[in-house]
Amino acid sequence: MVEIKGWLRIIVKALLGTVFIFICAQIAIPLGSIPMTLQDLSILIIAQLWRPLVTVLSIIFYIVGISFGLPLAQGLLGGMSHMLGTTGGYIFGFLPMGYVVSKFKYNGMSLTNSFALCVLGQFFLYACGISWLITHLGFEKSIKYGFYPFMYKIPLTILLSIVSTQLVKKRILYTKHLRIALNELYKKIKEVLNDLKNTTSFF
Image (cartoon, rainbow, N blue to C red; front, side, top):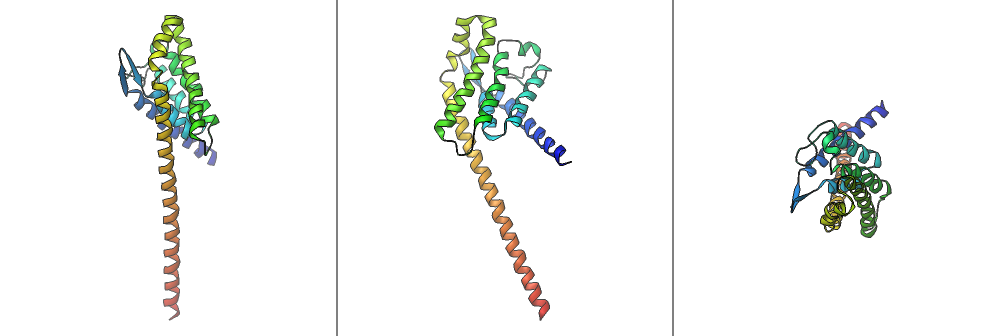
């Protein structure tokens, strides 16, 4: 029973991650004729916050949903035709990026190491994306349209993901400490009330 509840919790978290990726996919920053979405930002945040299993499941649910025609991709698109199109390689590249970042992160990681790890994750993303794009456009056009326009976006995305992750962690830590403090206060009040009750019953 405990194991079933654990898996249910993992699946629910993964589905929430998928929804987060979907929302970020609809936020497009125009760059000429090539829109830049925030999908990779959402995955970097998820990967830095959650375990590899939840991270990978979030991405798998997203990919499977698009493949089955759900309008989860940028522009509310979906279907196998979209997955096999020019952006399909980048969508599949979310998997190694998310796994690598989630697998090798650790508590207390410095900003430099976090940045380097996210750069490694982005390398896998663009390696998959450009490799797939080459089959459609050839090598030169793939680099021209699939990498150069996003060069300045990569460090900005990484920094934003690290800052966002740290803010979320601090909020979670603050909430946890607040909950502990309230529990301790509740226990103290309960002890005082019990003492008063015992004193009253004595007289």
